[in-house]
Length: 314
Ligand code: ACO
Image (cartoon, rainbow, N blue to C red; front, side, top):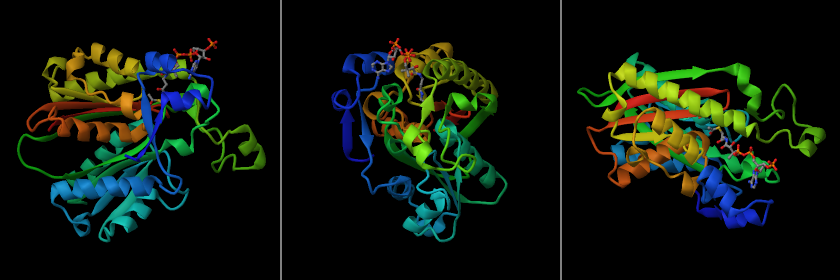
């Protein structure tokens, strides 16, 4: 996590908002903001080094790096390539996945597929986001929601009952405009007009996103559990994408998972897009809420729209 903390009180001095509104509607109290010269590759590389250390894996042993990010450091090349150079993981193939807030689950599934097909033995899956660089800091409807951060995992084949049990992924491009950066890409390149209107920054129809998020995350949880042969009550820990505590509560209720089995840290980090789930996993392990042999369900939703879930025996 970046060191700088941005509190709701800080935001009160930037836009017309207040602590009570933010906490009541989102559950967020503070978020982290990366330094000006700190990008997704830097944050992702730091998380990766810790993950590799815990897994007892050297950078040279990694043969696949999949980076989920909606905030690549540059348009070209992939942030995964910049991260590979930072890590000196010289034997890997590295590429990015653009799945927005669902990116972590998409990236894990890609790594799982490469490993299952025998194309990779040890994969590094990373989610790294500098949301502060694409947020409109004059728009109170969005700027209070997001934060920066990164998480990483070393993924490899294993024998026995532990590992990925099932996954379910979807997307619906018809709804793309409800949460997007309208311009600044190749279709409408950056120009003085784009910059002046702020069309290169995040624009979101909050209510529509909220409704779709609850519906889609519930659907994904259902399907992933069914495919794993599990029911809600079999889940020891639910790790949902951390966008908004009300979305999390509604999803848990639908999946019949009591809130004491749901990991929540959105209050301290806000919405870090794809990075929320791996950061939450890390904290759940540190706090001994997620232990070997437990059934864990991850579920996420994001721009695209994209959504998905994955059941894991930890
Ligand atoms: N402070 C104070 N007032 C605010 C703020 C703010 N930061 N933002 C909006 N308001 C005002 C609005 O202007 C509006 O006032 P008005 O009625 O006078 O026009 C009022 O609060 C209600 O606004 P709504 O947008 O209708 O509020 P809502 O209850 O829908 O909450 C929120 C907004 C929190 C954005 C909610 O819609 C939401 O969480 N949506 C999901 C969005 C999300 O999490 N996106 C992240 C990316 S996708 C993902 O990760 C799942």
